[in-house]
Image (cartoon, rainbow over all chains, first blue to last red):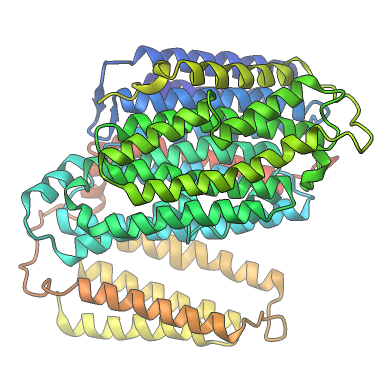
Amino acid sequence: MTTLVLLSLLGFLVLFLGAFEQKKAILPVVIAGLSAAFVTNALSWDTSQTFYGMMRYDNYAVSFVGLMIFSVLMIMLLASYHFRNEDSHIADIYALMIFTLVGGLVMVSYASLVMLFVGIEILSIALYILAGSRRMNLSSNEASLKYFLMGAFASGFLLFGITLMYGVTGSFDLLVISDYVNGNEELPMLFITGVLLILIGFSFKIGAVPFHFWTPDVYQGTPTLITAFMATVVKTAGIAAFFHLFDICFSAIDGVWFNILWVIAAATILLGNVSAVMQNEAKRMLAWSSVAHAGYLLIPVLALNELSASAIFYYTAAYSVASISAFAVLLGISQFSNEMPVDQYKGLAKNNPIMTTALVIAMFSLAGIPPLAGFFGKYFVFVTAMESNLNIAVIIAIAGSLIGIYYYFKPVIFAFNQEVPPIEKIKGNAAFNFVLFAGIIISLIIGIFPDLLANLPGN
Amino acid sequence: MNPIAFLILSVLTISSALMVVFSKNPIYSVLWLIICFFSITGHYILLDAHFLAVVNLIVYAGAIMVLFLFVIMLLNLNKETEPHKPMILKAAAVLSGCLLMIVLAASLQGYAQQPPAIITEEFGTAKGVGKVLFTDFLLPFEVASILFITAIVGSVILGKKHVND
């Protein structure tokens, strides 16, 4: 709760700083505020409070909120590099990012479906605007509009599902719904339809096949910095909210949704990876790769056992760190352009050792090469799946990872290409270099010592 | 609930909703949509949700529809600029729409025999809704303010004139 208030106030403070033209103060204030929020969040560890029956701040929420604050902090540092020459509406963009984080916080700590919906809407509406924040760029406008239309549609499905659920159980409270599910032998069709509509809504939001078709266009058109935001914070919040609901409410009726979600997860992994192979555009490739990762993340939801929460947390952490590094490198090379063919990585290695190292680590981690974080992320997901006897899903996921290695290695091989004239040294500021360093070190540390994060969300 | 009033309102709602879809002229669509909203307001009154009925009338039939009309007039939409979707898309949309309708209709089975819910005196009035909103649903109500400030900031970002962009 303290964290929620603190983050909201921080957003307002940044807006005021922007209004009074205190451009220099914004970044330090944002970083101090986010760090403070990280600390207050960490202090809530093991306290597990419920507020007004609407919000349950337990260890699950604390760990995911911590991860999201960390990701936002990294992206803010990148933003200071990205917007270094711009002075118009930075404060608004920072404030919107912080409000998005508030939405994410609500999404991982809800105890009532009303809060879930409010959280998702805060997160989504801020993102629709962020996607279109480069107003004079046509593809940014297109991305914003597409994301808005698709997102509104998905929210409609979700809301419809929530309504049906309320109609049957008479409550938005997760515990009441869970009691209803466990207490009734035969559930009315209306309830089951509600579950399926909610499933569709969530699949839209996390971009799972067959509700993924907006992802490549939106990811490409959106300014690269915001794409990094979508691929990390939004995906983390989405999958955490997804799992939270299914874990608490619908674990007893897995017969209803299991087969559907199984097909969705398998199709997401296969289609995401195969489509990524065929991309020549770096950002589109990362977009398809994020679709594929959504598929891996659905496997612990399918398994739904006591290991699932930890597996999802570790996977999202590893994935977020690697994605932020990958997008930082992309941002460094492509600068303000929304389009960057993969062969622009060519000749990166000669003059930019740090960026190349970050790229190599990020790509290897995303591909799941030991001993990097991404490998253990996949390992925990597979262990969780085996625990619930999802052997075929694991085989599909492994096949997907093998395909993945091909396209994750492409930028790395291009970076060491010596046939073309090497890329000039790209000058990053201190914050940019810090993000690269942090990406390298964290990917290595949590890869070598996976126990640091492995049991975090607890029960 | 008065069955005859319900029947009339339902026929009106569905037929005006169909007219929204089938009208060639977007302005007519909007006008039909206003009728549709009015008849939904009637349904709310039949269901004793008086506060919701008034809000629906003011917000949807009033504010939102004016906005709709403005946008359509500004965009100058007419028959010539209407996008033509390929036949296969139309067929797919009809098919999936029908499937959704079948699922929803089927899931309603068995609900006709249920006794109506017992409601209190205050149900649906501004007083009753206010009480629930400021006690049970206080937290979402407050958090929704973040949603609104986000939307306001967004409209400023998108609407403001920038010097260099």
